[in-house]
Image 1: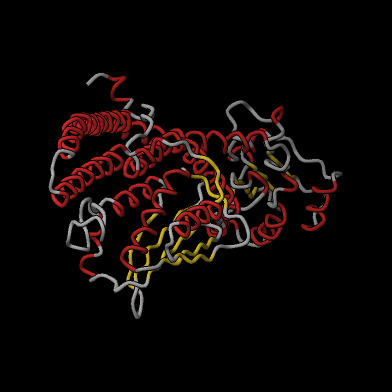
Image 2: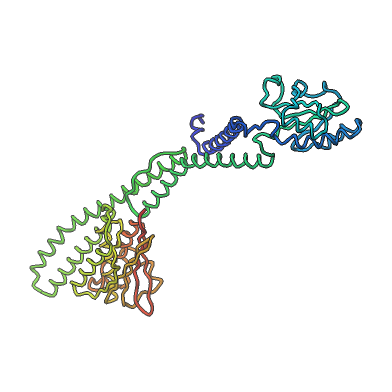
Length: 450
């Protein structure tokens, strides 16, 4: 496997993101520690070490020389180290080369007064005193106080950076690392999440519509391969759908000529009853062909999306049925219900549902409701209902709840299938349920588009 291809892998990309986030957090922490000024590295007098040193110095000075080394070891703590030295030459760097602190200073004069020795010798090593420290010296805080017998007790600590204690510094550093790492991870993850979200959205759209824009090949190699496979699958399925529609259009075109000849020859049939039966069969075949073409062409999904008033659309459909003498009641809100959709397709879906309610339930009642998230259209009838086991089959093409194929009592079984297809193309839901004590309800739920 070539190295550039390895870097393009999802696993390598994630590992690099994690390492980059850790490195950035470490660099950020070191930068803040180094450049935070006086607050980051307080002076020796304000580092919190002197007050503790005074009390320990008194205790060590009152202890016999033979026991001072062990005493100072016991008095050491995680915050600072304590040592006893018999001579100054034994002091470690940088204390060995440090200058004596002037007792005229308020800080060091206070130490001398607390110890009760106005001429006490005090050595101090401060990270800010670079001119007094050799190049090999560390930058830790350290002081040495001369005892009454000319021996020395020293105190040093490297845990006073940032001017805070160990626990607070650990918490602050941890929060900083978490913040920087989280920020880096969130920013880096967007590059991974965006193509995955686009793929999920395209798959959802493709499930409700046959035509979806091809995905951009973006992101790590594995995601680009999935997107390319999805685009190829979508193209193949679309070609199959287009071939099916083209075939049906060709068949319908070829059938029109013989149907026309059959009707013309029927004019010569002297038996009026047989002539009417033949004409009725020809008309049924024409209607079946047109219904099938309307269903398979998916015309509603090619229509542009526009903002429309659903109340006005339903009012128009209800008026059309009333003009034909159908019993259709409606309960529509007085306020406008604006929805972003395909008006011709939605009108066809609602018309199919109301037509079923009128045919099988003798009447229809249309109700429109909305909330912040969705719009609900309910179409009820007063019919006998349908066995629950048959409800899922109602949406299958060419299935009819009424078993006869008489167009006077029903269509060709494409009304509900077509309505479901249109509603799904709007990312909505269409359900059928029985009402009590009788009747059937078709419920359309359309979510507002963001």
